[in-house]
Length: 156
Image (tube, rainbow, N blue to C red; front, side, top):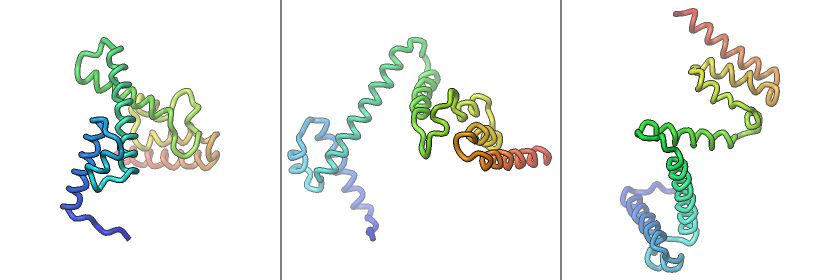
């Protein structure tokens, strides 16, 4: 069982992480970092190198896309461009199967574009995937959400 860290231990660990990152940025080797930061392990240093490299690549990608897009001239447009990039990357990954991955239009893109709420969105989602995933069970789930939506609308 893990012991809970004290606030002082958390601060010391955070300070060590910052030292590791600073020394990686300065180009020091793992051995030099481990000598300068006694708490550092080779695995921690390797993990930080990997994450820092990955973040740098992502930052360069976003910067390149923004540079190409000359019409972006306000902070709001910049935020929308970044969100578009993130959305595209999210559409390439699916956790837990492939039932959405090969669709021309991702259900969540349609749900967002149409401004659907939770219940309507779930109806679309379950209908869109029923052939590739759970068949009749997904159609029943869609009907369940539709029944709830009708119930809520009738109360208004």
